[in-house]
Figure 1: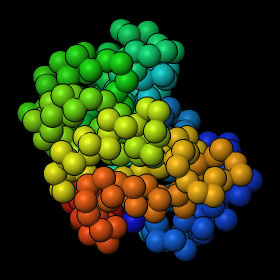
Figure 2: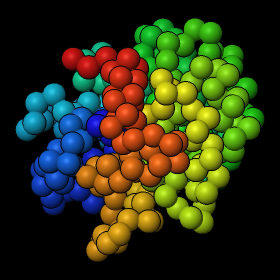
Figure 3: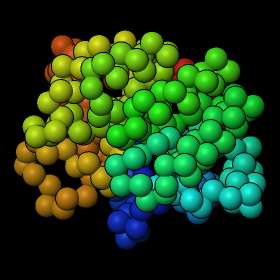
Length: 262
């Protein structure tokens, strides 16, 4: 299993990262894609890949999360662009729009998102996308560039079935997290996940966020971690009417087709 979205640069992993990754590896999570959300976290993500004590198991994305769009200036963009040249950096992002909290203004987010889209067209690297409370604007901007893009995944999808159908019509991939395990907020995903074609679905933890609420026994810490990915696989397989083995085989094929691992 591959965890396509894990925030290993988060300081909640500082004290026990090797042990955390070993636990995941022992449970069959053999590969992690570390999410870059700013210039500094993208640089740190690449450093973690280069200090890989289990060779070939870590890769990274590099980009400005919409929360960090205000940090996207000429100098920081030039430094970020250098990261995309490294073979361990397998996607541009995390980028997109998040109008829920507006830590960066909507216009800053739109400008930053468009710069990422243009770069993805030029470099033909996959896009790692984020969307929250901005579906119309997200789709409008994405549609302008979709014809020139290689591949794109909307990670941590939590939207409606109608929005999901629009994303699939654009031939996008979908990342599902432990949000689907939340009986308060994730119930709609439990039926929507059946709509995702086998070759467009990938799974992730988004650690240390989004601890699956239905884990039993409940973890003592509220920190999510990659070793909980098998639980997400079990729940997604259940809602799709598949075996875990079949789902794991299909998603690994999808991951290998979507990303280029060197």
